Image (cartoon, rainbow, N blue to C red; front, top):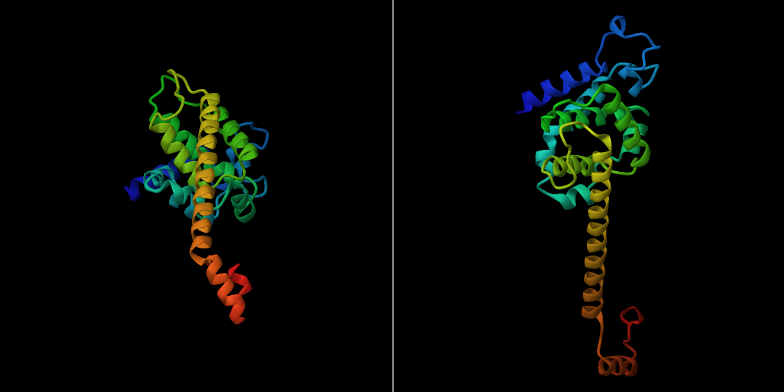
Amino acid sequence: MQTETIAHTIKTMEAQGLLMQPEELPSCNSSLQKGSLLSDEQPQLTEEQAKFLVKNSPDRQHIVCKNENQCFFGDSPTLSQLGRDYGSGFPKAWLVPQISNVSDYCGLKQVASEEQIRELAIIINHNYYWLKVDELLLFFFHFKSKKYKCFYSYFDPMVILDSLNIFLAERSRAYERREHEEREKQAELDRRNAISYEEYLRRKANGTLNIKQM
């Protein structure tokens, strides 16, 4: 599986023009130059960037889906952090194989075009830069599991964006549940640390009252 993951990711990157040799790079006037997802100055992936793409390829969805709370509350980087650490275009470069994988998986009559994939990656990165990598991996897994909206024969970027909004509502509920659980834990801790009124009077009379226990 890992070998297939690496091969698929590298193949996808090559198809999008992210691993091309300098002499093979298309003209800068080409609207399909996928190297621009990284930057004009750095059209090729560095070794560190390539390792991240392989480690966080679509196959990792099958791992993160086993622990949704870890996806929501773990420490995986956000899209904006990827931009700071690897370059402003890198989050979009990471999103490209995720979107391509969805298109391939759904077995559509007409798969997503390069323009659609590129534009959707840009939109997701622009509007949801605060989402974590693991959260997005979980979203794409849920999408492929037919948990949200679905395509009808043809790739429609709006279906993914609409589904992402449903996912965000689920995310909000997960955060609300976590906050509720934390409040309950704190309330239980306060109850355990509380003293009775009789004990309060006794300690006050003896001069042993600890104000922190009040």
